[in-house]
Length: 162
Figure 1 (cartoon, one colour):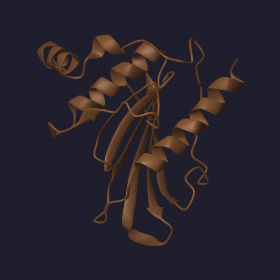
Figure 2 (cartoon, helix red, strand yellow):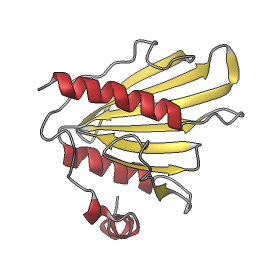
Figure 3 (tube, helix red, strand yellow):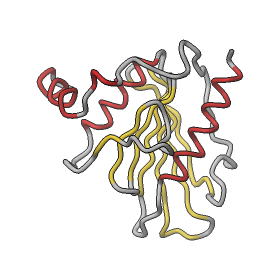
Figure 4 (cartoon, helix red, strand yellow):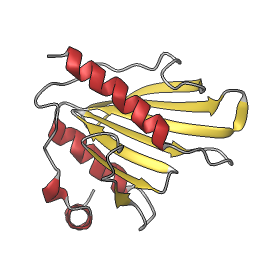
């Protein structure tokens, strides 16, 4: 990402209010896997592991049971630190083509920081983990519940790292 683009994103998304801060302190998750049972009612179609800018990336596709028109893409970035996870959030936001994406601040919002577009896409960070959940099929599936479930799993993992 170019410096000017990053600066514009930081300004637009109020980075000074959230960057580098986490309720999880310094605890980190070192590994993350999808086994197929993480999303209730959803079936893991495929999963791919990669490295991206120092983060371990797990890219997965899920269908709502046998319904192939409801498909979600879930990307998990396991970063080296909270700051790196927040940089991954900024990178994800920089790759999105909508000016309607906004910070989510409701009590039920997942993560230490989250951004979304209605209930069709959400990117959030909890500790050193960034998660991007978005629709990938012709039928729109609400992403909020999925994101909150994943956030709960991440929180439990971080708590066990004490």
